[in-house]
Image 1 (cartoon, rainbow, N blue to C red):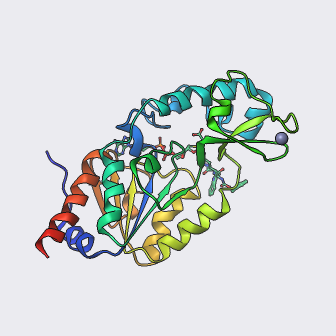
Image 2: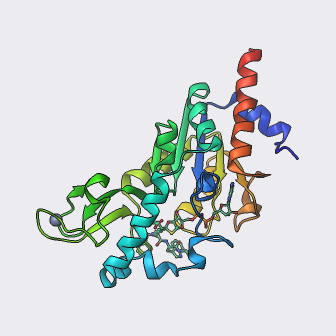
Length: 251
Ligand code: BJW
Ligand code: ZN
């Protein structure tokens, strides 16, 4: 059955000027990026603390580096999906569309979105753990062992946020600013278990936004949304774009 939404959301979406879209791993699943949790998730094979923490990196840098190199390869070989493209197109018909993403895969930018806050970093950037010098993805791409900084010899790590690490301040502040004026908040493809990102829909709702979850399954947070759309990102977001663009044509 085709995915649909309530008449209330249709009316709100046609009139909205400020929309914030909070995305998680499910947003990229239809592009072929594995999610973290769930039956096919990455954490089924590895424990998070084994790979996604600074302590793990210090104790097994080559293992952690190899894992990121493998994931970088997957990401570079795939394309944004219909959901990413619909969000990029929404920027053309809605005054302010802001993406707040937990994803590190850069697919929103590749699809053409321009206002993006990356809460958990970006796998295409890397930096030295000693002096902070940034290193391009091309410089490290072929390296199977963990590369060293050419200035100070320090280990190079991916610019992603591991458990126990603070989120990038500018991204977090930008996200909070965006949700404070959002009329609609779409939360797409996230299990809502990792904080502080998981608190964003609630912050938005308390600031007055109409909050909508788009997910193929119920999540920890499903009960706290104004509306839930059960479907994939690649089906639901083009459907919402159509709601908006058809109303533009009727004007
Ligand atoms: C589809 C679909 C389709 C599938 N369409 N849907 C309480 C309050 C605050 C903090 C904490 C707390 N308790 C513990 C903490 C600390 C911790 C935390 O939250 N832990 C929880 C697990 C309990 N948080 C942190 O450490 C954060 N930092 C922090 O809090 O700083 C302050 C601090 C500092 C020092 C000490 C203490 C506090 C940092 C969190 C960093 C998360 N990093 C990762 C790894 C990034 C790098 C990498 O990828 O390698 O980020 S973990 C991983 O989870 C990744 C993701 O961004 C994140 C969220 O996952 P996401 O996106 O939700 O994916 P899934 O797989 O869980 O869900 C996918 C969903 O999609 C599912 O629901 C599917 O149904 C759905 N789906 N296909 C639509 N086609
Ligand atoms: Zn260095």
